[in-house]
Length: 381
Image: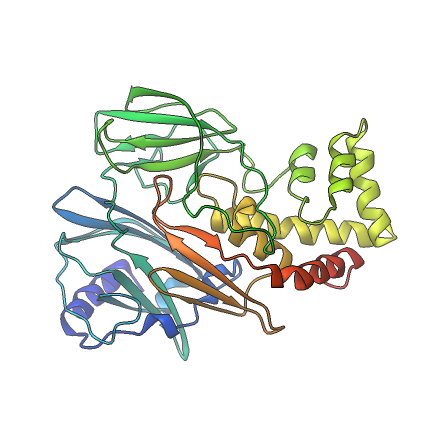
């Protein structure tokens, strides 16, 4: 399918769809499957008069897919009001990737829902068009081709910013550790961090690794874009210190202390895996599996901190991809066929338009330690 066909579908759908989807009953677990046949990314901006959605679609053989777009009030609504796009621009059209910009008027409902189908396969992707009392920023990062950067991390230098001549930056040191286990006490919903420094800059800037930045149009803007500066090989990890830190979900307090204080970190790292999996081949396979999950979490959930450190990243790494996922305006639920259920409260914060915080419960302790034990025995290989 050429992009022109997609855009024609956009106009048809906005003018003809007459009923909304109760999105809270739609299983969107595919969005957390790195190997899904489709990959979507988006970024929302606003200039005060209208909201614009940058949308990137990646898939093999895009021409085989059909697209329908719905705009509606809320995730649980049964009604919807039609709305006409102001303008649609095609920014990129290549074999396996399309990037478009969709502009809509400022008076918009809560979400944009995209239905993608091929034969009898149906996938749904949602984009929130409201973030509580906050507004979307008017600025956004762009690559050397002028295309929007969709990720919340930057693993290279040389990027620029669109829609302003000067910018206000707040710099924070990345001191975030791993997420607390699900049986720990509930944390404050809104994340906090200590400001390192703030400054003005024009057009482009070199971000420093191991820091994250909130970039705003000016010092009075209530919202901005938060970007984590990462190593060039991210979302993979290659340094031994990074590998050790991201395995802390598997280790006891004593093991963690021993690893971090080891005089020969590589030897201690190798010993941990070999001692748990008995042979070097099994240990290598376990390491590959575990760090593939860490990489997936980084791709999916990185915001102002690495994806593996987020609550959803932790659950993905330890329990794997959920079998069912359901979302509303303020809640996301993960279900596993093995019986586990995890609930994440969704709020908007200074650092992120959608922050997901696990609802912790002491009753989760037994399942947590059972799952960790299974991983360490190689049952989940």
